[in-house]
Image 1 (cartoon, one colour):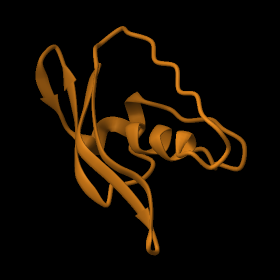
Image 2 (cartoon, rainbow, N blue to C red):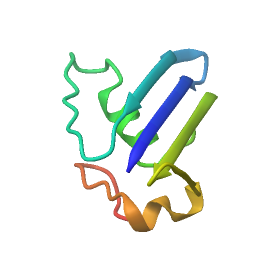
Image 3 (tube, helix red, strand yellow):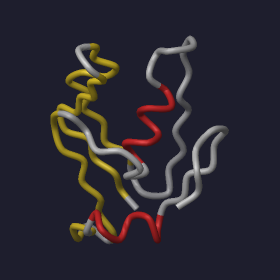
Amino acid sequence: MRVKLDKVGKRFNKEWILKNLSLDIPSLSSLSITGANGSGKSTLIKLISAYMEPTLGEIQYFENEKNYSIENIPQTIGLAAPYVNLI
């Protein structure tokens, strides 16, 4: 599945965690996310997995170059992390 982020931002209260992030993750690829505590790694993963909605921008999912509905993402992408409940 290809995941495309277009000018995505996430804000909690008045603080921007991510802002103006564009990223294209090709199908069958790997991605490493590194950074200091509080830098937005978990937020980015939650956005990509549709566990959380962006404040700004758009996240699109593609399967065989066809747009994949965000409603189907929880059945396709799973997120297991400390302090995060499973869907």
